[in-house]
Image (tube, rainbow, N blue to C red; front, top):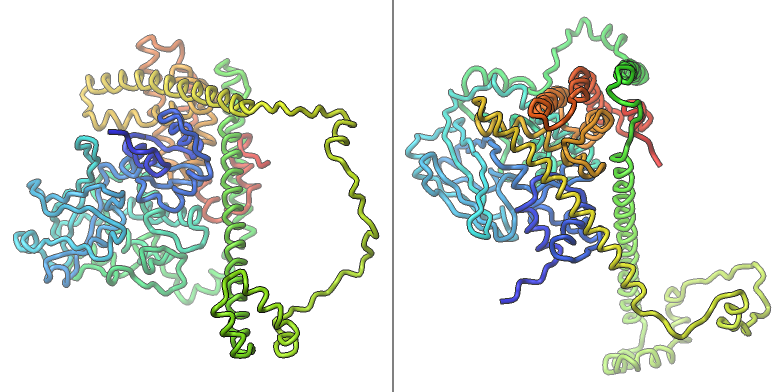
Amino acid sequence: MASPKITIARALRILATEVDKPMRIAQLCDVINERWSIRFAADSVRSYLKDDYANLGWLRINQLQYLPLRVALEGVQFRCWPNQQHIESGSIPLMLLYPFVSRVEDLITRIYDEEKKTLAVIRLQDDFYSYHVIKLHKWFQKRNFAPGDSIIVKIHYQQIGDQLEQHLHFTYERAADFRAQAVIDQERELVEAAVEQYRKLGRNEPTPSDQIVLSAIAGMPWRTSYPGRPWQHLLHADGRLALIFDGLLIQSTGLQVPSGGPLHQPATMNSDIATRRSQPPVNPKPAIPSSAAASWKATAPSPADQRAKILAEITALQQEIQHSREQDRQAGIWNGILTNRSREADLKEEEDVLMAELDDLVNDIFFEWQDSMLREADRISARLNEVLPLEVKRRLAQAEPEEVEGILSEQLLYLFQKAPDLFPRIDLPTSSLPKSVDTSFNQQQNLEEVGFEISDDWDDDFWDTEFDEDDVEDEMEDDRYFQLIDQSLTLINLYIDYLQETGKKLSTARNYARPPRLYADFLASFYDRSLDQGDYATLDEFLFYYYPYHYAYSSGSEVREICIALKRFYTFLKERGLIDSDQFAEAMWQRRFQAAKLANLYRQLADKYADQTDLLEQLFTPYFYKH
């Protein structure tokens, strides 16, 4: 049987089950070409992901990169709160599990209870959330489920033959057992990350909440841990974003129209939760006594003062960073030369995104013009029907299309008198026009006169040959990238084996190996290197520009942990004799608090000063620059 024709949608669905890392549009195009020898236009791939990302199995995590949904959601735990009506009816709407339930076409979702017994099997179509309910009457009854109790859901993916399945595992938790204090930090981080992602991806327009919420969760180290309250409740309590119809998020105007039932807090909760219900749970602000309100307003810093303060922090940090770099140069750890290939790639990608948005704008203008032309045609048709004599209208009704123009031409004088509004006024320009035009120009003769050789023997294979050479070059680059990744993965697997030998669980060892994986992709993508070829300059670029800029939801503490993990990894390589020196990783570990401070400052800039690129240039000196 012939294999199905590869389309962009099919290729993206297949890659979503195989790729394990964030990908840019250009990288996806290269992988598709490598896999199927088909070169799709980057704009076409971008358009598919923009309009149909969830059905294709992808998630946009920042301005430039997409991540397979299965990678973003594997192991994630979340909480949902069925209300009184759900419990009484013995079922919950699938919307209650939004946006974690897969929407990939033909992908099966299986739901299991604590004993791994099947509760439901779902295959979603286009109306994926509208009418689906999950029947849980026996499950509720067996656990004496009451309002305020929780369903904790854990997500896993499993490959069954050539079919990927999503498995949701339900666990019951009583309201009194909810560990509120254990999740305060992660709830705060989730809300802040969601607000930041909305600012970057939503651009103050109604945006599907899965784009915001899932991309915010994807980068969090606690995403597979004990879950906090449902994200809908957290955003509702915070108040900066509002959930409206069809699961869209907008910047809050104070009025929130919930989707899929009212946003509620469980009716029966323990005292800790009840206390938290009475005040904002995220970044609670202490009340200001009325007697001190006037003095507080008088001393509140102005926007200019706030900007000056953060600028002073950036300046101080950059001075500290430059001092450390100079010390390391004098110590002979590096040669004092920094590179910025990742920024060059970012500028190219940003240019592609800008051109795609410009194309969208042009299309919008065209369709608006087209709509206006259709409206004008309808107006003219209605006007003709009003003023034309009955006999003429009969002739038009019986006429062939090619006869209509002749019939209307006979009525022009009549129409000009009866309906002058059908003839728009044309104002001719007053500038002088040429009296004559020279039509004696002979194109071939004139071209030959200025030295062009005109030949009838056109080489039809010329352009094909050129493109074939480009394709071969692209394939060689792709082969080299995957060779480098394989080399790095060999080192990482050795490290994972070593960690297990020292008593670490496999899951813990893999978490320790995540930073080297990120750095490996960076080296292979921009420097044609594997992990054993890492050095001071590339690691500086990775920690002080690439990672914080591309993973804006990362906290300073996470960046600090990356520095620590990379130091341990390169210490292992040095002890095994796989590299000559690990001094550069040791030096970056010494600078881990600088990297953490930079990441935290970037989050502040992204939140408050997103349009002030001069601050970004100073923070990411010398990497960040504009065209």
